[in-house]
View 1 (cartoon, one colour):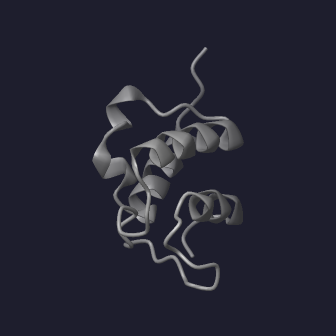
View 2 (cartoon, helix red, strand yellow; view 1 turned 30 degrees about the vertical axis):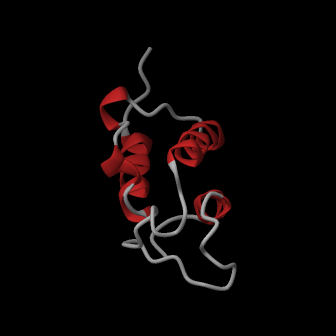
Length: 85
């Protein structure tokens, strides 16, 4: 698993078509697992609060939320950025 347990739990909560015992591969299409635009907005808010980050406007598009892997990649990049004053 390329991400931490918190991310997995947050993501699973937003994916109604993913059963609890089913693995979540990084390339699974989130739309196919039941995420819709409202769930994506809620997930974004929850991820920002949980990880104390802010997604920049230029990362708020469909591709960011295409797969678990793409979302984690954007979040990981936010971790590596220096805080701004």
